Image (cartoon, rainbow, N blue to C red; front, side, top):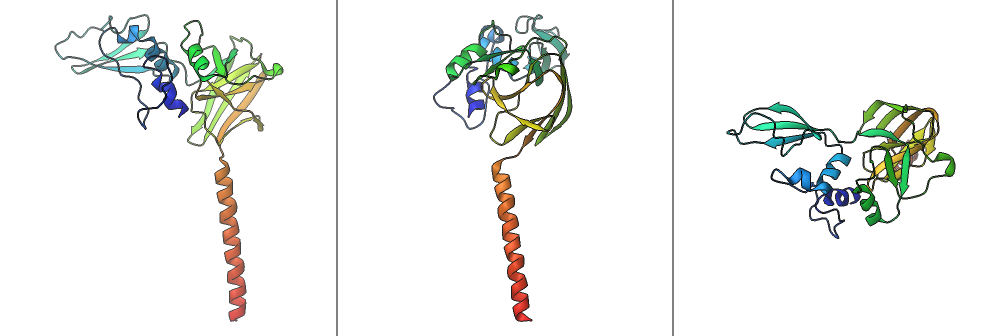
Amino acid sequence: KRYGELVATSLDGNIPEKIPRTDVVIYPGYGPDDLKNNQYRKRILDLLGVSYIIYARNPMEADEPDKITFPEDRYRFLYNDEQVQIYENKDALPRIFLAGEVLVEKNPEAIMTKIFDQKVDLRKTVILEEDLPMNLLPEKDPNAQLRLIAYEPNKIVIQTTASKNQMLFLSDTFFPGWKAMVDEREQQLYRADYAFRAVALSPGEHTVVFSYRPESFYWGMIISISTFTFMMIGWFFLRKKLV
């Protein structure tokens, strides 16, 4: 629901009372001025890390880049044929990054206001919904680095290095059941930028593991093991009785 609301704000920056569809659709745009004029749509595309845009062109149009629809300061022309052109969005945020600043807003509308505030650099600032401990407040570190080690459906492993506190941001949906382990110790997982995940890191080298471990899985295991155990006990006594 949170993710659907976030994407729906690409229309006018407001959170709708109801999401009109069960799937998530970015507000469509048309014409040469749409990407320039609809800053809400542009901001959501950037936040979601949409790196490439396919432009369906008229075969009669010239083969040169459309610099009106796709200004060169924001888009890089990559490909052209008779049917489509492909442009790279230079402002798309990385899927994973380290941030040295945080803002805390507990009201959903206030969070969206910050997301659409052009003064807020979403590459460097993570918007949280609860306060961080004072000893984990992040600081700017231009030399902070990270490396993606593994990305699987239920497990993500990232290695980080920084000389100051950092906020590790992952643009995967915040969802119950996901846990964050830092150097094999569980750490709080924060909801970031309205719908995503973040974890606070202290200075130094760390191995961060995001894993999906819902309580329903463990209850299912307990029920299955208990059922199997009782079946085996019942089979044992039934077999003994028959003998």
